Length: 248
Image 1: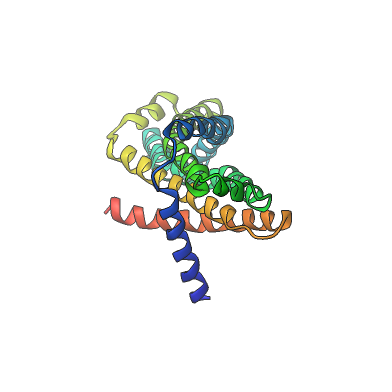
Image 2 (image 1 turned 90 degrees about the vertical axis):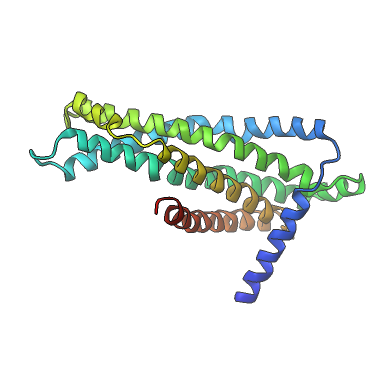
């Protein structure tokens, strides 16, 4: 098992070496980058907005219920909701969701191109398929995932406020004060740094699985499933590492 893992890890780094080679045509790469930004990023906005609204609402409900004490001001409930969304829920949970949506899309599309020999056709034409097909996906993910997480933070805070107000769980004015009390801008840097790392993991790992598919349609499906599992495991692992390093 260990030897198989090390071989896979070595293959992954060799794959990254092929991906980051000098492009044959910057113009074509830019066109592909724009397409991937729309496909992988823009199409994910409604999903992120919907999930974040309810994620913030649930977090407010749970926090208000567990801190239901007359000696605890509603402002502290707002602080707890803000920190939970900003530090963990928005970057990590949204990235796990995007791993399933975006990652499986990348893996299946590249796997289909591999089994239908479209990558072989690119090689015959003198084009590096790893760079031409994967580099724009990585670039689009690195650019747009932080934007999605910013959307998630704002919508999560909005959902938390609306839930607390509509359900009469907290005093809206005091709760809102908690959102702004002792706010630390570094937490935004921490959140977006995690998001960039997760974006690279999602785009590169899913691409590696799709790029190395062998067989037919069944193998493409299996590769997508393995990619989602590997991405989820990697996100949780690096979430721990980044939290330990950046918040010490």
